[in-house]
Length: 412
Image (cartoon, rainbow, N blue to C red; front, top):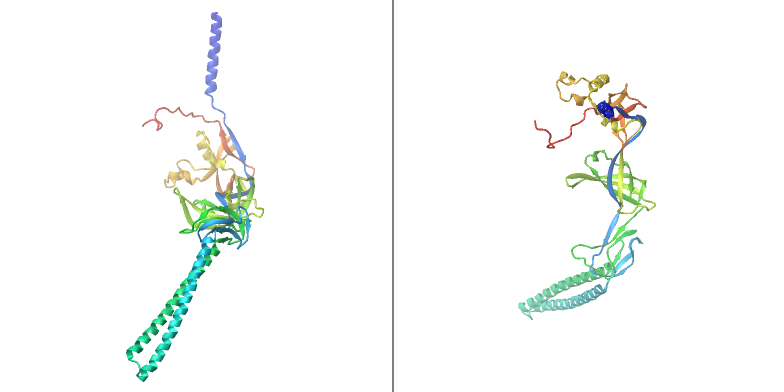
């Protein structure tokens, strides 16, 4: 029995020692690389907006009343001048009758005033001759002249009353004409906010009864572009967009307007950019949400560098001085030798890593425009087909201790 226990203890001891050395061994390091290719890079600015007709007219009413008839509905095509609704004209007809009566009465008063004026003129003319012959006194002549001047004034007042009542009659007739609501443009009804029997009041603000899109074959998108990207947006730039109704199809557009008025929402400054869209097939509808991508730069036949290569840094710090020497980079003290600027690391610029003898070696690069998945490689010793490191697998030899105590770390 003791023999078996001794053998078991020896096996466990050997297994423990082997496990200890296995766990303490240096982890194997491998690198994931990507090939530098040549092709086209397109730089885009992404934004979101809503589709709308280029010209949208809101039709209201200038008179109040009850809707008596509706001649159109949603999606109805209308022509300019076509009747689309009618307000009950009873009150307007009564107003016309009243205004016409007042106008006729004013005209009669004018004729009466003219008769009185003619009589006063004859009396003055006759009294002037009698005064010359000494038949009447000066006071009688003055009274006749006063009556003549008063008659002239009455005629002026009657003429003013006629003009006033004529204007009132014209207003009543205009209100009756406005009781029939007509389309101001050719287009399509995209909104209707009234029904038969509904009362509309045009007091201080004209109510909107219909919204007419003048031409749905030409639409536009008003997108909000961030202030950081607005300097890259130019007139006539090409744009593409998708809508949720057709997620797999990209539609084309063009930038036609960049508005200078800022839109500030929760301290975020954006600028409205208008993109015109051809909608000849009428598949796009007003109000659809469009995810727009505006092409701000394009370069063909350039070297393309994966962005992950610029973000890559070796996890192990042990080989870093050796890598720097192999890449021709300055030593850690070079910054102090050239004037002691703390920007020695920044002066090195952008760099990527390649594999040399299975070790990462830094290579300085200069990039240009950025696409959605690639960067333009402007200056570098790298060429098409070279492999750059984008990820390191393993090699984290220094394990971080488990955090304990305060999240701010150990006090000094």
